Every structure is written in C-alpha cells, then in structure tokens.
Image (cartoon, rainbow, N blue to C red; front, side, top):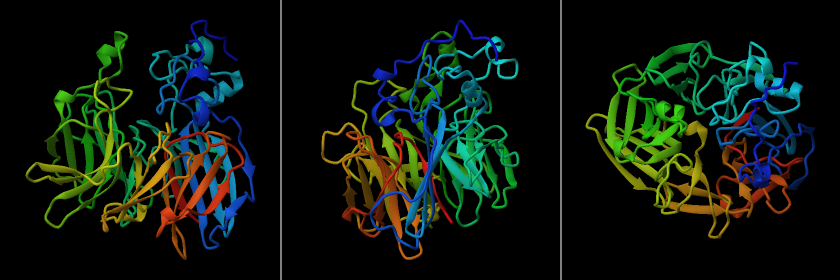
Length: 465
C-alpha cells in the first residue's frame, strides 16, 4: 500500500450537504434478494430487467462533491419474471474504487478541486489521474452493457452478475469517449453518439452498427471554436441533433481559481444538424437557454425537424442569475435548410425533468412523453410523474407523494407499462411503481418494496428478456 498524501483534501461535510443526505444519501450495501414483497399483482407476461445508474460515493468524499457529476457509480437492477420480482445492486469498480476499497477511504477528490493523488499515495500507474465517473446512465447495445460517464469511455458490466469488466471503446467508436446519452435507432439497430473535449476539435460524433462494429469513427463536428458542455443529443432518420447552449469550459479562469464552466448568454444557442449520411453540418442560431435532456426528435415530410425537450432558463449550479430558473416541456420546429426555428411550450407546467418516451419510437413520431415534476404541493422533491399525450393534447399525473425518479417505458406481451423508483423521505423506503401505460393516472397496478434504499439517481434502461 502506498503512503498517505499529507495534502489530501479534508472530508466533505456530509451532514449538511443537500445531495449527500436524505434520499440522496450514499448506499454502501450490495445485496441480491429474490421474491420481493409486492402490493397488487405484477403482470405474469412481463419479463425483463430495469436497470438504473446514479452517483453514489463508495466512501465519504473529500474536497468537494458536485451533484450530479461527482460520485462513484452504483447500478441497481429489478428483474421481472412472470409475476415475481428480484433485486440486486453493484458498484461500478473503476481502478479508483478498487484502490479506495483497499485503502478503506476516499483518495480522489471531487472534480472541482483540481487535486490528483501523487505517486507516493497511489503508485505510479494511478498518479495524477482523476476519478472515473461512469455514474450517469446505463445502456445496452450489441451485447454490451455499459455504465456511461459524462464525457469519457464507459465501463462494461457483466449482464448476469453486474461485475465490472473494464472500460469499453465499442470497436474504436468511443476511443475519445462518449457522453452519457447515446441514442439507438430502433429501425437499424445503430447506436449514434457524440463527445465533447477540452481541446480542438472540441466536438465529435461516431456510430456503432447493430453487430457492435464501428460504422463511423470519431468525426469532428465543424463550427466550434471553444470547448462546450453538451449533455444530451437527439436523433432522427436524417440527423444527429445537438443543442449547443452557451456553457463554455473556461480553462484560463479555472487555473486562476475560478469556476471551470462559464455561462455566456450573449452568445445565444446554436443547434447543429449533422447529416447521418456524412454531409456538411447545418447550424441554426437562436436565443440562449439550457437543455439537460431530450425526449425525442423526428423528421417531417416538409424537411423540418421536430425536437421535444425540457428547456431551462439557464443551468442552475453553473450560472448565477437574479431571475428564477424554470423549465418547460418544449417543442422546437427547425428548418435546417433555411435556419428558421420556432419554440413553443407543450405544457405550461413548470419544473419538469427527465423526459422519456417509448424507446421503440426514437427517431419517429411519438404520442406520449413522460416526465418527472411536482404535484400542486410545496414539496422540495420531484414527487410526481406527468404524462403528456401529444395526440390528444392532454396531460395526466400520478403522484405517490415520494421523491420519484425518471420514468421508464416497459413493453409487455399483453400490455405496456411505465415504471419508476421512488423513495419516501419519511421512512426512507424505496419502492418501484408499475403503472399501466393506457391509464397511468389510475395508480400502480403493482408496487414493489425494494430491500434497501435506492439513492435518488439519474438514468435507467429496460432490458426485455
């Protein structure tokens, strides 16, 4: 074991950190539990697994903790098997997590500290490295189950045991990394991804075929002259769609002790339409706003592109402003040929996030968008699931009265369902709520009590058996 570093940062004050206490408190226990308690009745024809990833520090963090980017990854799995349910969870064991498990404490600090452990503390191989953070999303493609990072290579997991197998580059398509939200075209089976970097060319995109082989190597996206943070993407039959909101990496300011990211609303938002056939990038300029997550996008017969997403005034935590930061489910109609764009609100309901659709509809017209929001209460947590029927122009809500996570669409043989994990802040019990897709506001057809508390986290996926 290497020697401790005297310059190791001080521990974070967990007791007073909003994202390290309550429903966000780290979970350190790994379990495998079968035959979970169920209220109601699970559909006998629903077979598959729901997996969800999220930040979960293996040991009490040191230096700083910036949610949602900091924190080791823990993957949770609920398996549905003909009316029965089981649960298991595992840490994603990066080299940093493995070393810290030997040391019995955190050795790497938060992203914003600028501290990296020296060779005297971690040895020559890990000296100067930053913590790997595959804690944002989980994706399966071509037999690869991957825990996704913000802008790095993912970690591949064993589908049966969830054991960590190592970093994955998807036949070279991810050799420069990937953001956490690649998109899989259900028609072709192709996975399309992008990645931003701190050095030119700043932005690349690539693709992987349904067989797992690289179709397009990392390819520069022309038109950027600075490193930008871009969290998610949208995909249509014709285009890779990237909203380049004005959140810029300011390395010079960071080296002087300032913030790493700078919000520059005067620059406005630029939207890149990257032809999937390899043609030149088409850019549209519009007003400044921020996007964390997209619901979906699709091409219209007239050449315009429809994009549905959650639009924020600015990125909280990365920008200071005197005006309230609110979000709306928004539809943008864009014309890549003329540069025209119009943005309208799908709903007047505010503070929505985590929009999801039936993933089988990616790149095509979708009827329903589900999202997390608040009921008409003073709750501090997102406590409700909202379902927006775009065909009927209606919305409905199911509110379990607990801190609820991102919804997931789960197609079954005899019916379709929405599901989500929620944690009651009163008793700290986590449950999985299964709702009938044709009437989610009616409440759960089944509620599964999970054996341990699942920390409020980020993104998940449904894997049919």
